[in-house]
Length: 306
Image 1 (cartoon, rainbow, N blue to C red):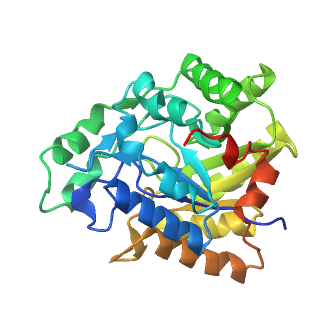
Image 2 (cartoon, rainbow, N blue to C red):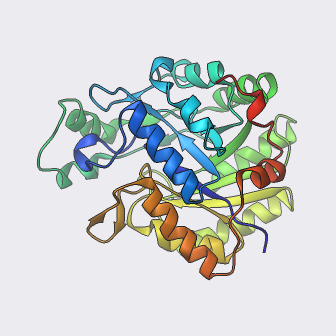
């Protein structure tokens, strides 16, 4: 098998500060946890920003001041273009367009993004925005139309030279990606992230992963690499299955706050070290950031704007 890429999603926009005291909020916390995750073996760092005053997901470029510190780790910086479902497309792209990273995430479709079941698990709230935000997701749609996708591909890919983590929450998202390949807007090698466990997308089920892999093989042949993330309790189980199938893995506090049942992860690095031990036990060798750059055709850290 080829070397395995470990990605780490450091903070995200789904979990709120009341859910874990270990969720990084400030620029210093995000930078420290990202660098530690890289030292533990994460070659790609998938990044969001937050308002340090209240922990709310932020699209303001001023809150992305941690990028320079993270760059020193040597890991590939992968900036979200998804941001949060409550942000406009212009807001979501404000920081990536300014920073010109090596990689960006790109959600491959519009979908329901329901987080409201989390409300019942929290007994005390740190900030007044958290509960209404989560409750309101029973009527929340994450919008990424074909026009939106084409805009991101042009601005971040064609203009700024970024490659993409294509986030596919459903099998139809693979069809949409094939559509953009046929349009000539996307070229290989593709890095496809199969996303499980978000209410509105695919459940974390092994049969579905097998179907996705078979479908991607048919649509993209040998011109793609696949990775797996599972939000919540299935994180490690689905990642292990992906590694055994020859794929790559993503962990991190964006996707899951726990290290094991009932045990909060104290850092992103704890999850990276856990999955690294698992994949190395399966005989996979962990890829370095420079090996990832070569495999995915990235422009290199010297071509970013931070």
